[in-house]
Image (tube, rainbow, N blue to C red; front, side, top):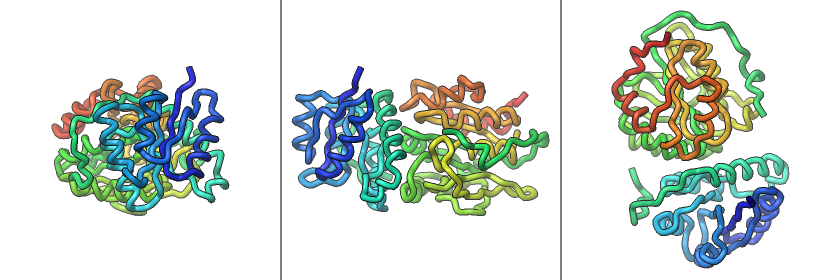
Length: 359
């Protein structure tokens, strides 16, 4: 069944570009466009779209104010359109908190050089929207200031690590719905936990804002990873957008390396790249966690971590915004145990993984 899409954007050019792209997909049809949220609200009532694309910054009413009202009164899948600026990355993250499923970069003149990738990105994210679980926003206040796989190219398979050390590394991967999941999971974690490395599918510029916001809310120190950063107890390193993050080891020191290589599973950073590096350098001294997300990035890498002796967890279907990545990882045998997001948090707080039986 064809899914109906409504585009709300003040730019006539963007409305035209998005309409042409979306209408090229047999599964989707743009049933209407609107230059602002007021017109958009009227068209939602008459056209009853399955998905809305929503610009973040618009005249008359900004996208986040409209999103807050929409998710409180008539919750539905929303895909945000955002520019790659520090300000807009902050606003887009707030939009995800308010219930938007995901966001895409606002198309520009330069996008013509990479039009094929833009088509694929929009298609993937529309698919995520129509399969996501949209929840009604309970609050009435907009809290703007609230605290194709080519992994072999970057990293070849190597033999299993047999030694056990007291130094642990926690590796987390997420995609669609992951910013909200991580914002719920990480703030209550105690500062004495082992170092955590995170790959969240996000574009360049967004990860720094995301890390800064998490740092204001978490007991652990959170920062966007830099090349050669040591993985320290009490610290969370977020892979920067448009860079792969790998874990390496020198003696007893674990540290991260950033890589500008090609896309893996159409992503950079890729969860598979992180997990494979962890399987090779940390082995049984690691804990792997895969959270909500569309697609299969991380499924193969998590299985390699498990085969290397690491304990692995996957977010369950009920608590996932999109039960894609955790589902594929589970089906391929990489998940030792599925848990709700809340139970994963309790598991980490109680440090159960420190003595987990990995037989």
